[in-house]
Length: 199
Image 1 (tube, rainbow, N blue to C red):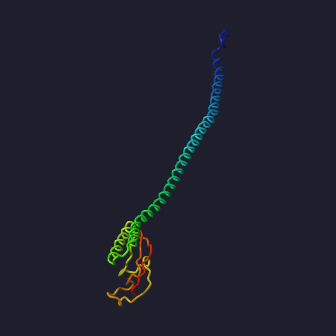
Image 2: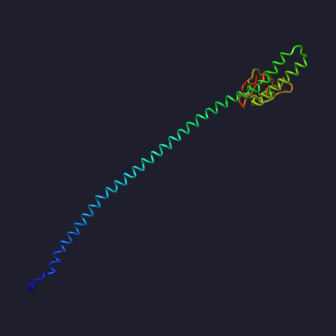
Image 3: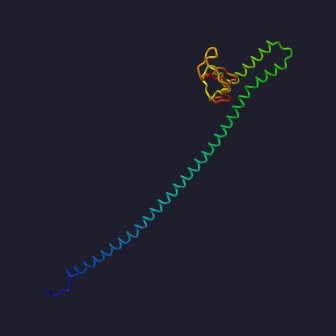
């Protein structure tokens, strides 16, 4: 047995303190884990809130871009409609302007008294040239399809005749004679040509 010396036994103290220190260490570790666990949801919530705020901001930016694009498209559609309307208006205006000299020539011809037949014929020929020039500017083409194959999109058959009865003979389903010329404008039929067709 050991004698009491008045000094505390350090082995006993150490062994007594060790469980107490372990308890405090374990308690501190538990508190830290609890604090981390409590902070973790707070951090996640903060991150999620920030992400949500960013998403709202992106949505607002996208809405602004969409509204600007929609306004631009509407303005473009309106301008295009106006341009098409102006193009139609001025195309007709340009064609009508090219017909004015033809009318002037016809009025002058009627105003002249005591015209000779040759002068009248020359005046009509000059007026016809003016009209042809106006047609050319307006892209109006005369259809005079004698000898061509019958085209139901451009011709209107009013008579059928035997192909060998005309001189020179004409192949079947070809135009023998034009009774009234037709007209195209930009490859679209204004009036079909009235024709006789070989049988």
